[in-house]
Amino acid sequence: MAATESKKVNSENPAAAKAGGKVWFYSLLLTLQYGAQPLISKRFVRREVIVTSSVLTCEAVKVICALVLMAKEGTLKKNYREWTLFGSLTASGLPAAIYALQNSLLQISYKNLDSLTFSILNQTKLFFTALFTYIILRQKQSIQQIGALFLLIMAAVLLSVGEGSSKASSSSNPEEILFYGIVPVLVASVLSGMASALCQWASQVKKHSSYLMTVEMSIIGSLCLISSTSKSPDGEAIRQHGFFYGWTALTLIPVILNAVGGILVGLVTSYAGGVRKGFVIVSALLVTALLQFIFDGKLPSPYCLVALPLVMISISIYQKYPYRVKKKQM
Image 1 (cartoon, helix red, strand yellow):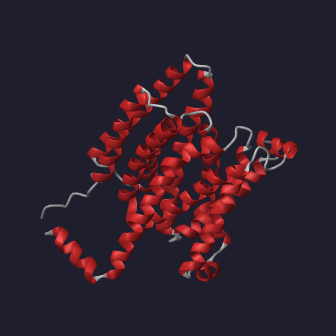
Image 2 (cartoon, rainbow, N blue to C red):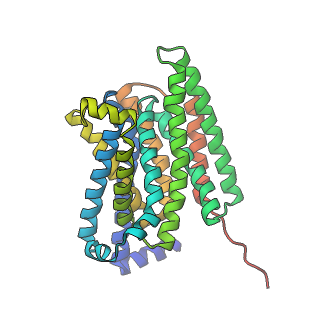
């Protein structure tokens, strides 16, 4: 009956059907991007590439994409007339600085973890998003969601132990894997949760569009990153070797792909909300595992095989059972 009514609504409302098509299209693109990003970055970004240069280039591509999309939907002039520096800083300043640091940490982690482990550990940002959403917005979690978050923590612990033990007997340094692979992606997850809650607050209070926030956060984050290069090792490397040191033409592929992914996240969230995004994340984990097996011939470790279903179950439960306010009985 519900399916029949849904089809009837779609047939009577072409706009709704068109929006539904966009949801599926953007979700598919984001699934492929999210799942392939770690593998593509590891394959096409050489270890000599300076992290700051790839992050700044990615932010520049994001700005260009967001401006083009605003112009296409006809909101560019309106947003320009209503824009103020104070409003931009209050809505996007802190999240932009946080995301800039997060992106740098993710770039470091890409180079020191296998693709599947990186992808699964990166999902812990869901827990930290829920935590900071409660702290900042007082958004509560259901019992099922709390249970799902504990499952997610268990998966992260399994991966941390498994990654360290499995690489200890190989030529790789286990301490390097821990401090330059596992720790950076977990810290990035904490920062992602904080920034997501702040962005949600900004969108609810300031009513900023996703494209406008993308532009503001990319510019502010880039300025923060550029200012840090005066004393950072990356800044010294840029001055000594040049901004594009270690780059090849293929380096642009993961950089542009990452920027497009940032735009797609906003589009999926705008059109479909967090539920569809959760399914996209789960699907992307499968894409990562499949691509890693196809191109690297590497089977997942036993710890990954145990952790992967835990992550999938926890994300599914979290998205399926949201907190509902109990109605007072009269």
